[in-house]
Amino acid sequence: MGKRVYVIAGEASGDLHGANLIRELLVAHPEIQVRAWGGDRMAEAGAEVVKHIRDLAFMGFAEVVVNLRTILSNLAWCKRDILAFDPHLVVLIDYPGFNLRIAEFAKRSGIPVAYYISPQVWAWKKGRVKRIARDVDHMFVILPFEQEWYARHGMDVEFVGHPLLDAIQREGAHPLVPLPGMDGRPVIALLPGSRRQEISRILPVMLDAVRQVHDHQVFVAAAPSVPDTVYGPLLQGSEAVLVRGLTYDLLRHARAALVTSGTATLETALFGTPLAVCYSGGALNVWLARRLVDLRYISLVNLMMDREVVREMIQGDLTPKKLHHELMRILNDGPEREAMLSDLEELRKRAGGAGASRTVAEGLWKILEQRSESA
Image 1 (cartoon, rainbow, N blue to C red):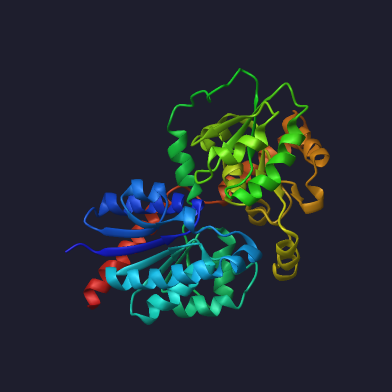
Image 2: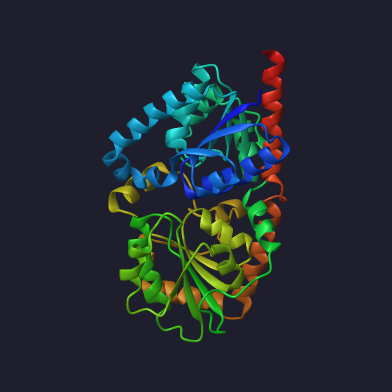
């Protein structure tokens, strides 16, 4: 009888990494049954997706409070579904507010717990490391400094490299084709985020910043779960072209990019595309974050390099004028652009080699085998 694995990802990036992990796991062990919370990518990889990420992504402190009843209902449903499926292993991917509660439940229910892509406890809520040590049996981390951080807190975790390198390597194997509507000018990429609130807040600033850049063509990357109707009103009066499902192609074409803070900043950097990082949140969310988060930077690019490689345009700094100035700095040939290109190459080396998905898949299979032997 095949092994059963229950995987939970709650956001677009988790869907991407979960899909690559599931694909590697099923290539080596096609008999495994995978039931999951995730998105279209995880479903295409072979998982039975029972709850879609479009219903799970709540952004910021305030939105979590507003949607608390839905979140609690999802938690209760998930616990019942796990017990009904009776998995040999629960695999949690990022999404810590939800997944740490599931880790506690699974551990209490006698189900081994593997966590892939650590909660950013090194940034805030450091006390949660005690819960992780108690409830998580195996932790696979993707940032080089995380292994040392956990070691200082008495946990032995495995650094596997960043899974984005797997996705980027797979993308690089495909020939680069023109984007729909390309007219031959160099390309500027706008990645305004994956949630409606941040897109509505940040995309207008990005569009204002590029309005006078007529010698480049501007493309906007649509988020998978956000419909065109959200972008339409924002793009009125702009020459920018919306593309869907082609973000990696866009980044391969782009000479520079403006990117909303999140996983996309690291994706852009690993493609070697110079970028500026944008963030603008609700006043309450930002006020709380500044008091709770113990970090010098908000972007993974700067955190991994431990210095400012990319400019972070946050709240009051995120104006069309300032963003336009930063774009010109990284778009035009010169020492500043060359320095960033060199730094992005160094970042890629620090991220580790490709193969994270396969390494984690092999680690999960070992856990499953060990459980079979001890049963």
